[in-house]
Amino acid sequence: MRNPKNTLRTSPSVPAQTPTSKSMSDLALKALLVSESRYRRLFESARDGILLLNADTGQIEDVNPYLIEMLGYTHAEFLGKKLWEVGTFTDIAESQKMFSKIQAEGYVRYGDLPLRTKAGALIAVEFVSNSYDCEGTNVIQCNIRNITERKKTDERIKELAFFDQLTGLPNRLLLQDRLKQAMFASSRSGIFCALLFMDMDNFKNLNDTLGHDKGDALLKQIGQRLTLCVREGDTVARLGGDEFVVVLAGLNADKAEAAKGVKTVVRKMNVALNQPYQIGGALHNSTASMGVTLFKDDLINSDDLMKQADLAMYKSKEAGRNTLRFFDPNMELAVMKRAGMENDLRRAIEEKQFVLHYQAQITGENRITGAEVLLRWQHPQRGMVPPAEFISLAEETGLIQLLGKWVLETACARLVVWADQLEMADLTIAVNVSANQFRQPDFVDQILKILKNTGANPSRLKLELTESLLIHDVEDTVEKMFALKAKGICFSLDDFGTGYSSLSYLKRLPLDQLKIDRSFVRDILTDPNDAAIARTIVALGQSLGLGVIAEGVETEAQRNFLAVSGCHAYQGYFFSQPLPVEGFEKIAQGV
Ligand code: C2E
Ligand code: CA
Ligand code: CA
Image (cartoon, rainbow, N blue to C red; front, side, top):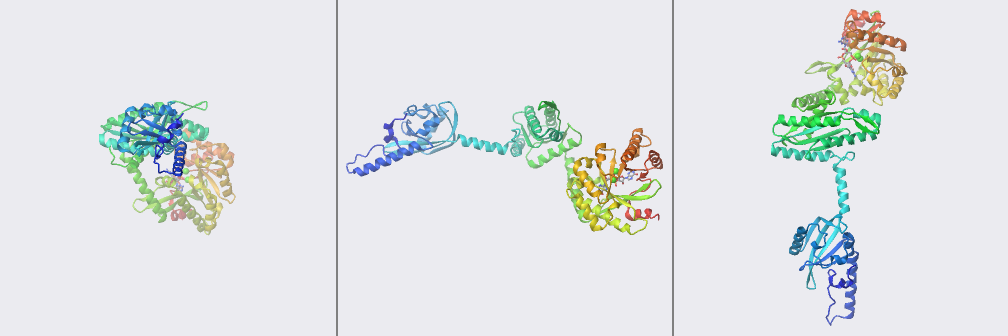
């Protein structure tokens, strides 16, 4: 324990000895003693460690209880020792240097100094020293604050900010930083680095079917396997979901050699990733699609580099699973073209550059029962653009909402015009509906509103839906279809036979018609499989009480074959091409 006799002599800012002056009154002496005991209390109860050194000898003259508690040495173990003799300053040479600095400069501050406790634990302290003269003795006062907990909190905050919580891998923020470092280093060394984007091929399925816990477990294992495949200076990061990014540093100064290096690492990764994963007692398989871009300078910005790797990854996905693609500038060109097209498409909707062509639907007796409307884009420069070139873009960008609404409004307005014409009044119009149009929560309301606004007869409107659209959320589909069916709207199942035909859902849906896909009709005379499929669809229609129409009928022979198979409704070039409305009206009126 500390020696109480030292109390007066070494307390900070307090005269070391009682004044001897005879002139000092008893009262003054008493006051001094009161103040001395106050300072003593202050010293002893401080919640920071305080250590007093003799500035000349470097010996410790006093330590307060808090420092004793912090470091675990007794008061006696401190007293008379030099800083580096206590064993708490981890580096002897360094602490000697420190003392010289304190001696020379008086005030020194160390924001984060490691100290070792007697028990051997390493703690972090903030160390501030001040020197002053105290009754003729040069005293150095060191204030020592334990910042170990604060440091841990800071590190935890840093971890939260820079690391992915699930896998412990660097997150997007830290990746950005590492990427910039790699770019800077490569620009100086002239050695190529690579940025690799990776997306698991079937993760969404696995996550949906097995649950998120298992999905998380899989992601962790992927992270671990990837980390084992790279070198120390490389970075494996997780962007979120099943997207991982790898920065491979210091590959080669030659681009072809660098690409070879990437392929070697990727091969290693594929071997690691393609091993079965043990999750919740079962084995699962997973593969990855990867895209890579090489870089050797920091002229391009890191965001663009990320876009390049991302783009290459998408190309790799498009090419099939479990593949690798290197970025090439043509990919960017395609994206730019697409972006340009997106702008064009927006403008086209505003400027109403679209028209509908009408393709006749015919029954066995060569009677026109109606038409399917097919979109055409009258592009100011490119001329008539077929839907194959813009529908998927419109779907991806959500522009199909506006476009689809316009198609429906136009078709309904046409029904109203026809309603007053004898030859046309009974004709139906079939409208193609895209999945993301149908999945809008207010899809039913949209249709009913259009019918109301135009005044069209709902029983003349037929909506063509595809199988993939129907199975997405069967409950929602059934509800919407019944709501529309109740108003008299009909439904045709487009491209039938190409999707996920399942009798169980077909039976639940209020369908009116199955449409045999063009691909079966095309080879119906030459491919026995296609002929069998067409016959099966007809039989299915009959057993479910649904009509069957064949699309893409180009020849009489095809028509006859279909007729013999029991299909008596047709659409195709044999009867009529899709025509502008006037053209269609002429043939429907037999002009
Ligand atoms: P779909 O619904 O299967 O439309 C039938 C396609 O087959 C049309 O192509 C039509 O022109 C073509 N076709 C008709 N008869 C024959 C034939 O005898 N032989 C051959 N080889 N082809 C024939 P189109 O107009 O290029 O439309 C392609 C696809 O674009 C449509 O396929 C449909 O999925 C989509 N589409 C067209 N209009 C719209 C629309 O208003 N909304 C939505 N969401 N999609 C549309
Ligand atoms: Ca169609
Ligand atoms: Ca079709």
